[in-house]
Amino acid sequence: MKHKIFVDGQEGTTGLEIYQRLEKRPDLELLRIDPDKRKDPAERKRLANEADIVFLCLPDDAARETVSLVDNDTTCVIDASTAHRTNPDWVYGIPELAKNQRERIQNSRRISVPGCHATGFIVPVTPLIAGGMIPADYPFSFQSLTGYSGGGKKLIAYYEQEIAGRDTVNAPRLYATGLTHKHLPEVTMRAGLAAPPVFTPVLANIYKGMLVTVPLQLAGIRKTAQELHAFLEDHYRGETFVRVMPFAGENSLEDNYLHPMGCNETNRLDLFVFGNDTQAVLASRLDNLGKGASGAAVQCMNIRLGVDEKTGLTW
Image (cartoon, rainbow, N blue to C red; front, side, top):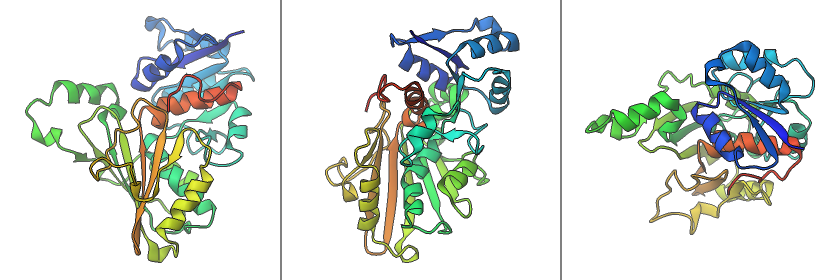
């Protein structure tokens, strides 16, 4: 018997990526909404309540509306928007984060998919805080170099159609300079931080790919970079989609450079630790549309349905 899946918002970047990962799977039946009824609450309600899994790839208000339309106790909602990421009643969709996280995902009907920048910070930092390696009140900051696809159709069109000859756009560009990026609340809550970190995202002229870096002053931690690396290596040992790379990127760099596109077209996150006697840098590399969005959503769906979580995904 096939599981019924409805992607609400399937015309957006995340929705399309989810659909592409699911459309050839023989174990699933994809429910499609008539384009003329995409904003019809009655039709969205019908499909949402018919589905076993509903993916929400919508603006926050529309995501909340769809949740309100589900009136049964069987449909599982997997929300890729920001709407429920800090709601404690929603399970956070990073299966590798804690020993009981997969069980919580499998038993939940409300799952929130993390933001891409947040994933890059939370995957290395949260275990270190939970394990007492870094204090929760450490003054964190982080930077994220990201492809423009995360900005949706409008930004994609801007980069691909309107930038010819414009060097200021071809070059990397800092944004969210008001220091209030929408991923900060989930980063603070889900990582267990005492205060929000300083976050500086940088937009690159690449379609997708992401490199998140977290600088650390070891004097404030009293651990060596090698000890941090060993702890993360132990925490994520055996994981398919989170790969802790050799210390200092040994044999993993290209001409001594770490570029952001090495995990593109996969659901993998590569985790690096660099350091010397006084400083360290944690670095996460991921596909912002893979482990940073659609791939993570599909991984959570697989766990919820009780199938191999790698089904339909690459690594």
